[in-house]
Image (cartoon, rainbow, N blue to C red):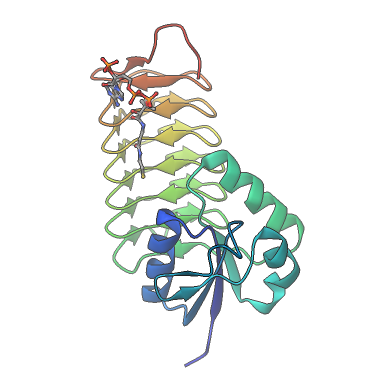
Length: 213
Ligand SMILES: CC(C)(COP(=O)(O)OP(=O)(O)OC[C@H]1O[C@@H](n2cnc3c(N)ncnc32)[C@H](O)[C@@H]1OP(=O)(O)O)[C@@H](O)C(=O)NCCC(=O)NCCS
């Protein structure tokens, strides 16, 4: 069996899930990097070998690097830094997820357990389709989008860069969600959401009326 080494940047909760997923997806070794190093030197069974600077100088020793930082803007910034440095940025897909052969995953995107990405969906770089979430046919997700656990996007939904769809939210087919927008836990989104606005509720309305976040 060929040895394959994956570097994971970000040793927080999301990083643990990504490392676990990567092992089940066939990566034989996972090494963490986190800017809290050297204060943090291990996470579960995995070693933390350095911070971002160390990863930038050693990424060529790995077969792939994944950025597992939960915050969308930070994840995207790190991903772009590593991409610029020439790192290999594979997508990581849980063997228990479904990704259509007709879907496209951008570099560094992760699709976690029991999630589904259906036909002709196109995901940008560094997206997270979290546990049990679904992205339906013809959806287009920009870079750095996070679809949280149990959230569902109907067909042909467009989600702008670094937008965050909260736990268990539902988005009606064809809706457009702007860059940097946030959809709160449990929201039902039935109309478009402007850039950087947070919406909550059923049906979803702007959170703290008039205040863009
Ligand atoms: C919408 C959200 C961003 C607001 O966060 P916040 O600014 O910290 O808000 P607070 O928790 O201080 O709550 C403020 C008020 O909004 C209400 N509220 C918060 N989130 C809400 C939601 N999703 N739906 C309805 N009401 C909500 C609270 O009940 C509270 O009401 P009150 O003032 O009457 O007590 C956040 O609650 C949220 O939904 N984040 C997504 C989290 C997520 O999906 N995580 C996934 C991890 S993988």
